[in-house]
Length: 96
Image: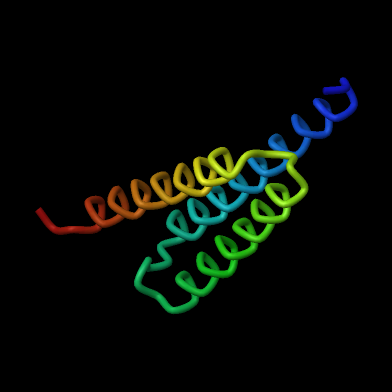
């Protein structure tokens, strides 16, 4: 594999991870501003962002810039982080 192809793959992976981080930050901002996770707007933003990232991952896999397994790991990792944020938000808002 040429160094140029390796660099393209590294760049693709870095961009996908940055986009996943941006989605996570967006969710954090919404939760910090007391937007309820059950709110249709919250769900719409999350669904739209996750769909967009999944399409980016699919495209990178089709170009063979990342493996299907790596793409799956990126999406699953983001889903776990969003779920953890949601649980933390729920715990914070629940009366003791």
